[in-house]
Length: 175
Image 1 (tube, rainbow, N blue to C red):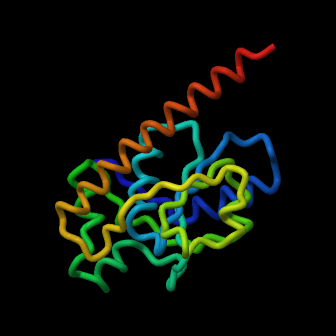
Image 2 (cartoon, one colour):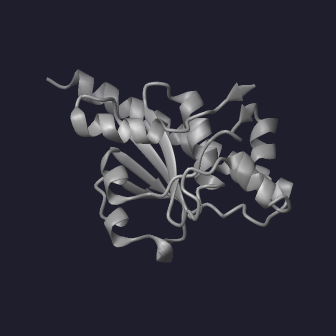
């Protein structure tokens, strides 16, 4: 099983990004609370695209830095994301929730937002690499619905990575 433990990865990346613009391209996945969709996308993308810096954050994170294990203990019912990801070969319980900020978003070439459009701040929508994915929030839904959401995100992540690889080959071949 792949264990995901990126407690301060986002902080290190943002700090390094401010020091050097030569870092590989990165993608930030954003959802409402940073406990479902964005965590799923981060784990799947990290496993499939090792060259990309990958992180996740939320629009409304009440406990910045809280582990998903702690969140799951506080919300034992109707929170199936860690169980679904475990069934897919990922242990995400050590991942930590992060609040998205303008400085964090600026550190990434791509920002993929899965939060509800009306809740998304304008500064995030104006990010040059902003993309919106209309993915239902698995919060409060069944295991099966959460699994369907994870499979939906997996397909989108694969498409995203494929487009990125095509784009990087096209740029590398340019005179």
